[in-house]
Length: 214
Image (cartoon, rainbow, N blue to C red; front, side, top):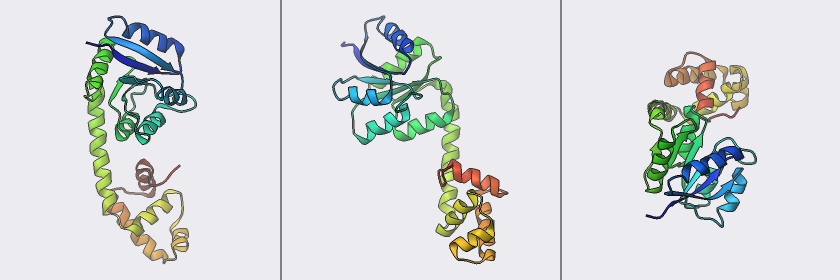
């Protein structure tokens, strides 16, 4: 069986060197290219064709999630395995949303990393098992949020966005050219539909679901 061709993208040269030595030990994996930032990674992928791209998230110039999005946008066919220190489920969620093939933490055992590489190279998805409960919980939460957003009317979403950036009912009324009483009714309906009790909770919901940018 031919060795799996790997490209390592990480801004720390010692990590790249360590991974290369570790992965090439048994002869079933071959590191064919390295990059120290996201832009260099994309540039090199125009000339080298790895089976699997090992991708860090925190990097200068262009981070791993931006690289992942660019790969999908440009339809560059390469399996991507994120290898990161980030165990926060938000990073994993973003990577999954964009379309990552695998996600493993840097503190994993080498056996787990190799298992992930073989799985991804063969067309499977691989999420480190210890991360799956948090991911499932977050996916349920996301689905619940989407269902609540679907319940809001177009006007209620407008009001939610404005109250989330700190506007008072009177200011919202003036902005939307409606009465303050109407705004109050909209806010009451928003609280009910989102299952929140105050403006701060509503704002957190809006920010979490990218309805407003901070």
